[in-house]
Length: 340
Image (tube, rainbow, N blue to C red; front, side):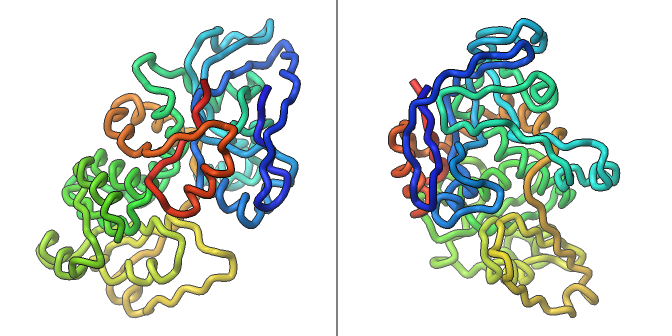
C-alpha cells in the first residue's frame, strides 16, 4: 500500500509498504478522504513532540471497511466509516471529573490516515468508529473530527438559543465553530476576518461576515447586539493579540474562548478589571471526547450539505507536500487528500 511517511521537518516521502495481514480482531479500512489539520502543518514545518519520525500523519479521515478479522462483529465489509484518532481511558482523574478530552492515558490509533489503508483493533473501534449513512459523502465525513473539536468548545461555552457570538477567524475551524453555534440556536453569529473569499463562504452558511479591514468591528457588533456585545467570543486563530482583542467584544458576564492554539511560552495581557468587575470568563479547549465525536457524527449527517461548502481544495496522496504547503499559506478553507 502507498503511504506518506513524515521523516523529518519539511520532509514527507511516498513509500510502498506491505498491506498488513489482519489479526482475528482487526479491521482494515480503505481510506477514501483524509483532511489536513493545522497540527499536520505544524508538524511538517517545525516538528511536534507527539510525533517522532518516521511516522504517518493524518487523523481526519473516512473510508470503507475492506476486510475484517474472523472475530470482528461490530462492522461488515463494505461499511462506510470514520474513526477518531484516539479515545479516552475513562478511568483517570480527568475522565472521572468529566474532563475527558484531558485524559491522561489516551489510547491512540496505530497508524495515520495519509495512507491507502488504516488498521483498527476492534476494541478501539468499538469506541472510536462510526458507521456512516450511505448519504454522507466521504469528504464531508472526514470533517467528523474537526466538528467534534468544535462541539467540545461550543458545549464548554454553553451556547444557547438567542445568544450573540463572535468568532474571530474565518478559517475552516472558525466557520465550523460558527455553524455549530447556529445549530445550538445562537441568534447572531458574527465571523470576523480579512479574507473576502472565506467570509463569503461564512455568509453562505448563514453566518454574519465581518471584514475587519473594511468595517468598524465595535460599531458592527454594537449594532447587532443593541450595544450589549457578545455572550461568547470564540478566538479561532492562534495568536494572543486576537484573544486580547476578543475581550473588547464580550459582554458583562460573557465568555472568551481560546480555540486556536498559541506557541508555548506565549504571554497574554488581560485587564483584571474585566474579569473582576465585568465577570468575563476566559476559557480554552483542545481536542474532543468520545461523546463529542459521536455527536459530531449526527451533525455530519444532518448538516452535510452545509459542511460540504467548507471543503475548497483537493489533492492526491502523491501531492501531500504541496497540499500541506497550500494549507500553510492560508489558501482556501479545508484541504482534503482524496483517494481513488
